[in-house]
Image (cartoon, rainbow, N blue to C red; front, side, top):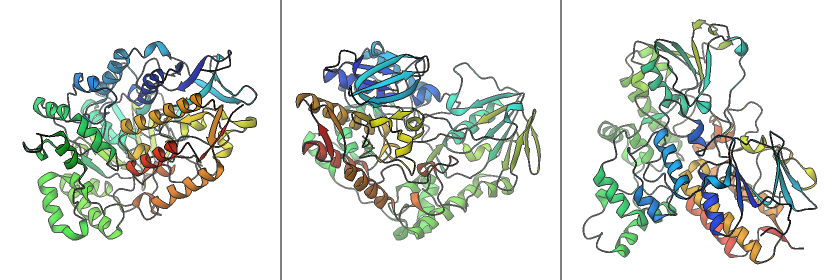
Length: 557
């Protein structure tokens, strides 16, 4: 496709996680020559790097899957309802082998610079080894949670024990038997890892900066009859995903009866009907507690007023705290696990397996750094304002520089050498999370300004990659050389992203989440994902493409 014989491919993709993997498949179908550059030694992205004990997905496995191949849907078996990291990585490897993706991936290749060449209209990518590759189009499929965050703590370089990060966990087995282990952080990674580390360690000490809201995950094995029903109804499930705010169908075999399964049309009609969702304010605290007693704390997530009504949110907070106090035997420990600082739903909802029960173990201690601040790391452990904890192993479960970290660290420069970091000095500016003005023919997959982390990521990835492939095909067929957003499109979209987030728990003054970049020192506080919902977002993207990309500036030679 490229007219420049110096180009190494039509499209270069950075990253071989699920986005980069699907990009190979989809771009090949469009007749494009594609090359993927991947820092790791194999595919999987997030699921390649995050190998820590307890790592698993918070979307039901049957739905955390690709929908582009009916054959793939039918031949893959998920062992659990919410599968663990090894099973998700196995799924990634199965896809790679089934569609022969590795031949277009260059592994162990970390990109150090991504530069637009104005005169040639090419993107030039330089690797850490000095290799230079070029293509007309560049797609950053670097993931939203791919740059581990490790906050600086005085003395960390002096620690003589072993240091680990959940986001860079070793491939080889880590033996913690009888060892004194410290974990810094109680976000999603920490909540998943802590129960498993406690089973292995001689003693586990958790250093908690901020308490977390977490609800028990479904821990059931996948039953063959349930899996068969899902596979039989996959077409309907995919349609339901497209109509759901978070890209999850909420399909339940119990809601499909014999009269509904006799006709595909009837099933589709049924799937599209909105279901009535009760509110916290209408049910009241006593009725909701009865539901919690019956089904667990997860029922709180089903109320539509949880994220928008402060009164409803506080009722949920009260119920949550009361139930945690029932689960944790030591009342002083239980009090430290409660939060009064922000509301339920402010941060990404965490699913756990025995998180609170773990604090009932004799070999687990909690250090609340709000009143026992970490002062430094020593040769033998961690010094806080109230004492010293001896450790053999220190685990950072401190999350990621989310959504923008991989992009700002890639040394991306656009027209006339303008760095992306300069454009984003006051926060990320994109149109639809797909492109940035001043960076022609550069696309981002699930970038800031798109639903991304507020959505089933595989649904979001398929939608983005399909849109990008269709766009490039349009450019080729119309002999268009460049595409980039109008400045007005960017500003209007960012204004809309901010407007729809106003009045939600996500942007409440007391909410400091990685959605806002609050976990990274010096990062501009701005709400990065699109909270308006996946269907609304997809409609906007579709309308833009169907109208011939009026929100973009296209140029031809």
